[in-house]
Figure (tube, one colour):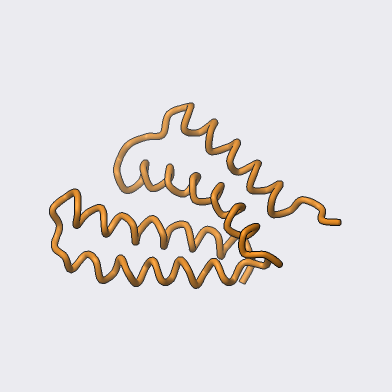
Amino acid sequence: MPTIAAYIGAAFAEIAGCFAFWAWARLGKSALWLLPGMVALALFAWLLTRVDSEAAGRAYAAYGGIYIAASLLWLWLVEGLRPDRWDLAGSALCLIGAGLILFGPRG
């Protein structure tokens, strides 16, 4: 599985899983929301193992930038709040950092 696809899938699985817990704990949704939340979090963990990296720490570090961008997309599309210019600028910096970590030349 290509690395970028694994990262994107992992990000949305993690956000969906965490949101299920948020919905239960903070929005008063049924505890049944926890079941798909746990499945989504397990999918997230599995997808990160599909990333082409020699070290887990490097894979997780680069994932952080993807997660931030995906979280802002979730904010907009699911929660209905449009990210502001500071959100977008911060996300761009994180994606640049993730790219350096993931694609930087190794000696």
